[in-house]
Length: 334
Ligand SMILES: NC(=O)c1ccc[n+]([C@@H]2O[C@H](COP(=O)([O-])OP(=O)(O)OC[C@H]3O[C@@H](n4cnc5c(N)ncnc54)[C@H](OP(=O)(O)O)[C@@H]3O)[C@@H](O)[C@H]2O)c1
Image (cartoon, rainbow, N blue to C red; front, side, top):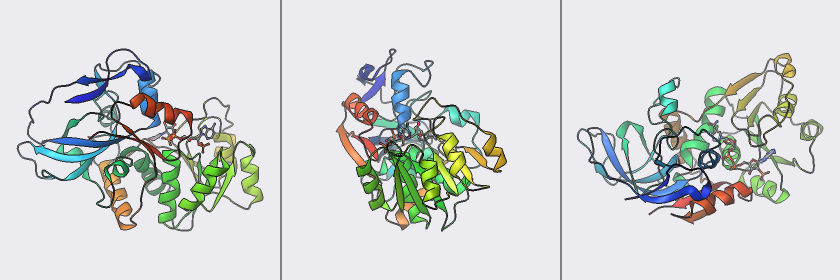
């Protein structure tokens, strides 16, 4: 079978299609035919050597996929041949608090990932995908959507009627709009593009601000009478100070990403406002199962921006890097 791998050097063009072995299944293992893989910002950092340089080569890249079970090993009971499944981002994080070992086992970094024609996973790492989703849509859920679910539902204690601020219109932020909206909260979004703000409104965002033409967006929120209860902080060090400023007294910041880089954050207001800052790293199988149940109940459809063919990893990554995308960039494998 073929797999997209880094073999020793870093760079988007260093990810090449290699022949990889198809090992026999051990007890509890499952072979999955991968149908679609969705990309995350992390995959870009990994391919470029900006995540860590200490990777095990050859490394099959990417963490998020959907596919079909084609073979089950001895003793497998959770899934059967023909089931449509996704592996969890951290295959060994089932529930409760995360452990060092589970975090280290996250797919596509220190452990082989999923951009391959077939993968082998422990049955305990798998969840059934929502029946109404295509493989391309289902592949978007295991990292970005679970991260938002974990942040809002588990850490921030989201309630219907709350206001959620999210930054940018990438994969994480659009899931924040969709998940907050489907749970009865009000989503407010920032973007560098008025056109993307309009599209976010169509997904359910109640308001939006262009952070390029209105760089003092924290003051603009105040002017509009919007005081977020929770912030999905993907901007990082250059946006954090404004997020701290605009969130309500006693509010929640979910620290998720650092797309803006740089910055010099004054953290004094964070304690003056009795804020809770939650570091969030994806989520457990239990969280992915809860998310999938909500996605199914609400017939929610993830936003797929563009689908690239297997082998066009570099083009797909460059598209994501360009920032032109709205939602998730996906690779169709089979
Ligand atoms: N902690 C976790 O578990 C976890 C999980 C998933 C992702 N992440 C992280 O979360 C971040 C977002 O991930 P993603 O997959 O959604 O990325 P993405 O799809 O690449 O989207 C990033 C978006 O951020 C906006 N943006 C870019 N520069 C900005 C700036 N200077 N200020 C404000 N907004 C800016 C852009 O939106 P516009 O084009 O609308 O301006 C861009 O589309 C990344 O840092 C990623 O590594 C963390």
